[in-house]
Amino acid sequence: SCNAVKTTKHAVASNKLCVREDDGTFFDKEHPHIFIILGASGDLAMKKLYPTLWWLYRDKLLPPKTQIYGYARSKLTVNELKQKCQNYIKVLPKETSLLEDFWKLNHYISGQYDSRSDFEKLDQELKLHEIGTVANRLFYFALPPTVYEPVAYNIKHYCMGKKGWTRVVVEKPFGKDSESSKKLTDHLASLFTEKELYRIDHYLVKEMVQNILTMRFANRIFNPIWNRDSIASVLISFKESIGVEGRGGYFNEYGIIRDIMQNHLLQILTLVAMEKPISQQPDDVRDEKVKILRAIKPITIDKTVLGQYVGNPNAQGESVLGYLDDPMVPKDSTTPTFAETVLHINNERWDGVPFILRAGKALNVRETEVRVQFKDVPGDIFGGKAKRNELVIRVQPGEAVYVKLMVKSPGVAFDIEETELDLTYSRRYANVKLPDAYELVIRDVICGAQMNFVRSDELEEAWRIFTPLLHHIEREKVVPINYQYGGRGPKEADELAQKYDFLCN
Ligand code: NDP
Ligand code: BG6
Image (cartoon, rainbow, N blue to C red; front, side):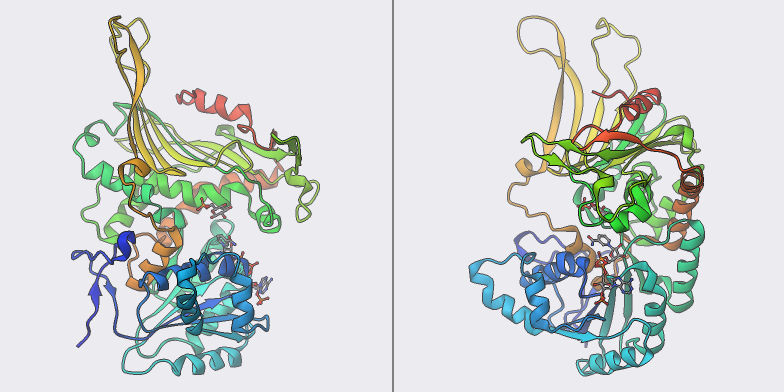
């Protein structure tokens, strides 16, 4: 009786739903779905969630019978919500009436996060839309982590769906260290099953991050050389060209290691380093990721460089503010806005190969990439001119995979030079629109595809690796090295990478 469509992957290219047959998850087109945004008055809801829900609605990628509920303490109407989102929702002139239809699916309820009666009221409202025998509820925590616990409790006790699945989406940060993360995990685990929980790491759905497994395991050429015999070092780097503008309060409490490295970069590392999973099923992939994490020892301060940006006149001669100039940041803050660290994986494939993680705000470019540097060619016959091969996976911007390699210089003279085998997506796939990460995240939750969400054991291992370093930095008040807004970051970071066999250009 159910006309559910089987799917997990969904290319948004050409507005079609690409259905894959072998992944065991469902896009239920028939039954009512209610999407509840908790913290609907906030930054994430305005800037990301409402715009993403609109895109999905526009592209017919939401289940047809979807209703959207905003919930927060602020007393707002849907109309006010609409105004608040206006600057973030992109709409073509021909789509304006469709956008009106989208807003008709929206509702808003004001309530406290710790009030039983408010959640009971929400439950009563949701029931009004749950016509028929099956209906599903998706709760999205767009909230500060301080209120996760009461909200989770109230959902479990007063607001679970009675006619279908209830899924709970949680945004990072998942705690501040091993202990606080365990407390949160235990609390959520006492209320929900792992199958009901979706911990977001939006980097996992970025096109080129997803491509890592395909490139490694659907090609013959990489696997035989993907090990300590051929690879000298790996750099996984995240650079942003803006500072913490507008988020200084949050950032100062967490810092760059918790904001980017312990989650996004470590997740990328697991995909680069893991063994081939026995299938593409979410738990088979996540089992392999956990194995890699378990083989990594906690990182140490002697293999780490920390930085903090200071103001600097930009190219136009206007001055830009340093981190400490942010009104939300204490003047004596030692929170790092840049970090680089080196870790090693203690297994047969990777023994001795340094994995360098680098993350920084207010740098010269916005760029996230993986660089795999191969060892020098043994038995040189080119007078030392042959440079190392390097495989670069550019996650953003300008998705690309390219390999630096040596060729004979074209022409009469016999010389050699470095060039690139270049697969730049905008050229090769010019007509394909790559979806936004949040579109994929939300679609995956609706379909029940958990591969790109963080399992509790992955999270525990990630905190085990980083907690001693974080505690050391905080206990000893380690002073970060100043670097200029818009620069390359501390020169000590390049020196550290070089020391660990990564040759910087
Ligand atoms: P906000 O600070 O905007 O908070 C969201 C809403 O929560 C607010 O509108 C407010 O609603 C309520 N709220 C805020 N502070 C408190 C408080 N101390 N006690 C109770 N309620 C409070 O957060 P964001 O939207 O920026 O982020 C939400 C979650 O998403 C966080 O976990 C964040 O780390 C994560 N995240 C955010 C990103 C972003 O770009 N913003 C990116 C990635 C993750 P009201 O007062 O109406 O109840
Ligand atoms: C978030 C961090 O997780 O990722 C932000 O909290 C960062 O500090 C953002 O700016 C970067 O995401 P993206 O998708 O813009 O690269």
